[in-house]
Length: 465
Image (cartoon, rainbow, N blue to C red):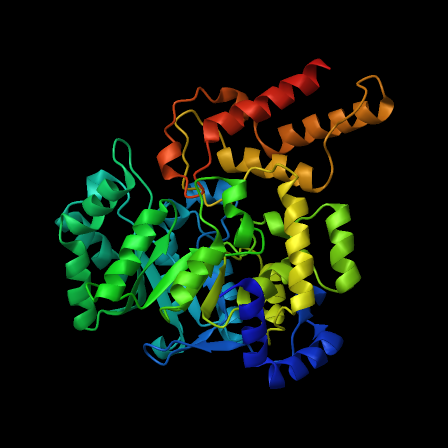
């Protein structure tokens, strides 16, 4: 199925009442919290064909939870998470139709599941769906006993006796000294854990079993081949999809796989897709002026984030779109975008594909700020370095031209001062020694040491000019 075909199919599937309601709420959004736009329509829901679950199109990714101020966090030895803020966000989400909450044993330095469990346990269990993962990345926890213990801890922290959606976390990646197939076998096959998870599903402790994919496409294809052969049944699969990665994931990084291929392979098998990184770690929410102008010509009121979420939610075989919403304003805006969804039209799709071309030309680092590369043994704040560099690219704050020109000097000063403010000097790119510790952990398969060297070279050039 090509992009135009599924845009046409998806738009037709939800065009009637949803488009009418959407046209109304676009013109009559009332002021939400702190004056933010809040939709008057209801959250768009998608039906899981395996269980009949009515799942909210917006899913809450619990990987970037609000944190306590540093001083208070040090006093509170149990957790650095601001639990009161998490409770408020979860309450608002449930109140506005969000019922899918995605977490993992490794999110938020291992505190996400516990914080998620505390917030959700205050509400009836039938009012929400919990998704968590078997995140046994390190060979230290590949043993059967350690992997089972991780699953049991998840249930305990989440204060539940069953998980609605359980994922094999980030299949396709590799660990140090192992290729992707050896890593997959070590995590799930040699220890018999995949068969054990199937048994837990039969016992009702797991309602839907699936996997999230990053990395080697041969592993993705292998698992779908198992599905076709009846060896293992996948109830859902989590993939990265956004308008940049639809055709340009490989152009951004030759080792990645275009979202068009991933989605099509799932759709033709009827496997519901859960979407991660609709904003590419926030990159698609910040656009340079020339791209923003094109978006405004099509819709004067729409934000870059709204365009990205509408795109990610349009295909009919998508169950939910995850967003890691740290702040209330992001949650309010995203709820409004999907209450209800206005599907992307063919004309809008063509515009976003043109903009994807322009965004690729910016030469940004394809980092999604997932933090899997952290902590760096040498203290570098890898996501912060990439975030600052990408933001400056998007906002056009890149010193260019004659170094003697006053505008160049102003831009250079702005860039260097901003760099020191956003990233502590002892955590900047110049401290990278190329140890490669981060490489096996990056789901985007970024050559992090190379990019650090490139950014450091740019910084040194600015300092010397």
